[in-house]
Structures are given as C-alpha cells and as structure tokens.
Length: 312
Image 1: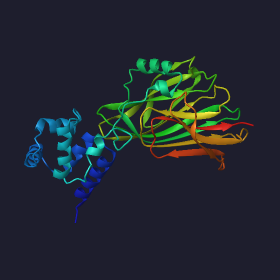
Image 2 (image 1 turned 180 degrees about the vertical axis):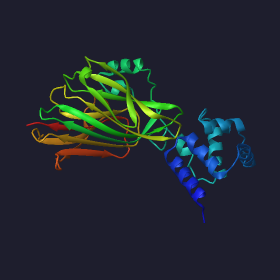
Image 3 (image 1 turned 135 degrees about the vertical axis):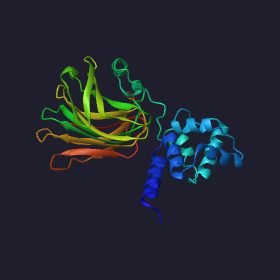
Image 4 (image 1 turned 30 degrees about the horizontal axis):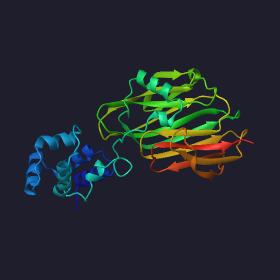
C-alpha cells in the first residue's frame, strides 16, 4: 500500500510525463525513483549505453537536449532504468504537433496578422523573446459586442505553464476593428497580475500590454491570471479571431451580443494564415439568457481560429 508521500510523487510524475517538458519529466522521474545520477549512469552502462553524468545533469536541467542517435538510445534505456512506460520520455522529444508539449518552431506573426510589421516593432520595443517562455494550458476568452455592433471589450482567464526558469510576465495583444483608436483602449489586470508597459501602433490599430505576474515562475510551474481590454472605439465588428503561433492547450471562445443588436448568422472557422481562405466552417446557434455563441478547441494548432457573424 502506498503512503501519502509516495502517491503524491507518483501523481506528480504522471503529470510531468503527460505535459512535459522533457527536462522536467526526467528530473521528476529521477526524484520519484530516488536514483542519483551516478547510479543511473552505472545501470545504463550495464545495458551497453555510455553516457556521462554531466550529460545527464544537463538533460535534467534543460541546459542541453538529447538529439544525436546515441543520446536518443540512452533516453529509451532511461525509460527502462526508471521503470517508466515505453516512449514516456522519448515522446517529449518529438516535434510539436505530435506528442511534445515543449515549444515548437513558431509560425511567424506575419502569417497570422496582416499588420505584422507594426506588431513586430511593438514586441521589439518591449524586448519580447519569440515565445515568452510560456505554454498555454487553458485559455477562456469572452468577447462582448455592443449595441452599435462594435467590439466593446473582451476578458481572458489564462492558465499557463513555464518551460524555462525566471518567467514573470506575459504580453497580451489586442487588435481592434477598423477605426479602432488603441490609445483609448483600456487594459485591465483582473487576477494575479498587474499592468506594466503598454505600447500601441495607431495606424494598425494594434496594442501590446505587458502583464506582470505576482510571482517568478520556475520551469514546469503553472500560473493562473486574468486580464481584459475595454475597446468600443472601432466600427462595425463582423468576426473575432485569435492567432496561434504555437500549438497548445485548450481554447474556449465565447462571443456575447447586446440584446439590441443580434446577428442573423454565426459560424466558427479556421485559417492557415491571415491571407488564407476560411476553412472548417460550422454553423453556431445563438443561445442563452444573454445571447451568444461559443467554440471549444481541445488542442489548438498553429494558425487562426475564430467566429464570424452576419448582420441583417
């Protein structure tokens, strides 16, 4: 019968193996099995695999990543030494879109947003790295369309996981509809964060807000935070889209409409890039006390996902 500490360690290991990244899963497995690196090295040698203690240390710290054929063979043997299911570690080394939850190569903002040049300038000004060090676990977003058929605002409830140490902020991007004045858009920090620097590009209608966390994350840690944008400065809104540079976790989008301005048709769709045609369209029916539609995507892929609607 397992005691409480053993059960907790096994639960933590199962979670790390399921979500990654590789170095966190390896480190958690080593801790759960109570094996020092020199003992692991010895057991690998008994199976005909030579790997140095330094390499093992680098792998569990995330400083290096097994890539060469002999290193990948060592990882397969590690699964046996650590009494893990087959492919439990090797799957975390596969390219994103298959089984890994580490950040894959990004699809450029240029393919996701027609005003990409303006956005790239804003991100450069805020010294943003390519991926921000965060992986989305779950993102719930609610969009409100006002009585003038305008994008009145939106709120996000975001769960992220750090894939490197020291992450303490998130950059939220708001792209308004035609006529939007980003200088008048209000940024709200609603849970476990505060608003830092805010930059915008008036001609492109794009705003980037820095959200500062209440904690500095270590690799593998999760964080929950909330934020919102109050807009209402643009013209008639006919769709809401979100671009994903990386594959990730669950995304839920809810669009609510003012009772005084209800659309005649709603549908969800995807796009491979900003200039690509819509695909995967599916009709959505207005429902609820406060009329609205929604979509749920269990595992997002790089590209664009959104909801469009027609006015009478």
